[in-house]
Amino acid sequence: MKILVLGAGAMGSLYGGLLKERGNDVTLVDVFKDHIDEINKNGLEVELLGVKKNIKVEACTSDKVDFRPDLVILFTKTIHSRSALDSIHRIIDDNTLVLSLQNGLGNDEIIREYVRAENIIIGTTNFPSDFISPGKIRSNGTGQTKIMTSIGYETSELKEVQSALDNAGFNCIITKDVFVSIWEKVAFNSACNALTAITKLKLGDVGKTEEGKILAHRIVQEVSSVANKKGIKASADNVIELVEADFIEHYEHIPSMAQDVLTKRLTEIQFINGAVVKEAEELGMYIPVTETLYQLISIVQSNYENILK
Image 1 (cartoon, rainbow, N blue to C red):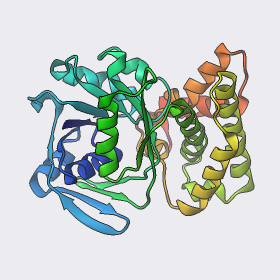
Image 2: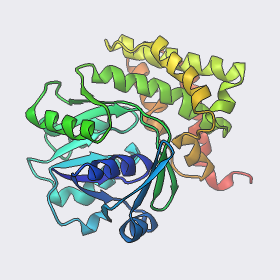
Image 3: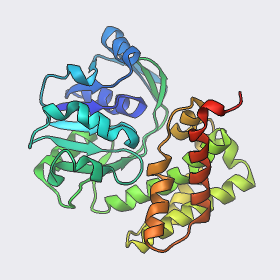
Image 4: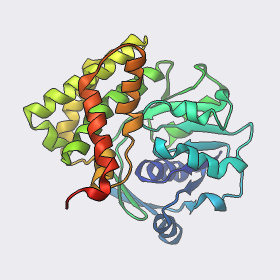
């Protein structure tokens, strides 16, 4: 299987690297030239549960791609999905599969502008991965990958993708409840990503305060209530249990949204908290804590140049 990983940051490099290690034909595509150059020169260094390995994998910018992939794994931030897909549109045909394991809501709707609905695979991953420096990533935990076609039924191509991911160590399962997983991850990220971003604190530093726990629980409950209103059986209790565990087990972790605020980059707030607020409004619901965080982070990222040092 020819696999193109579009967006070779921490997660894209983890998935692409381990898929390559298991014998797949993988190319990493990204806009970060230093990262690409380091991978091509010295290989991709993956530190997995304390063990370092060097994986030889091709990396390039999108304009250098000269083959038609069987599978595109989209790992850009959702705010960059259109520009990323635009950059490889010339090599996509009616047989190309696109897998999104991105954060947030609405990823499949964007991908439908480029490929047929039956060729879109959506899902979630809770594997951790951190970008250390160009050519180097670290993952200090395990997780699970859940996938399904965007139209909700299994295909031979879906099973092939599941097998490739599972063989690469990503504990991949096919599930008809993929939207439950997506909404539960949105609930988790709406709490953990947004709270660390607005406070500029590590995950554990938020969770060690009673106020942090209360806010996280309320956000999870609000997001889950919107999913439930839509008929999606997301469990607030399951997400709260995961949040509480992560406060302890990943104490030092700085979620991607917090990293974006600290480095004055655009966040995914529009597609996480903001997308839930939009869904709630359409349903006639009010989710005050989630909406307040959305508005606060939107204010911050709109004024990056004015932030005091």
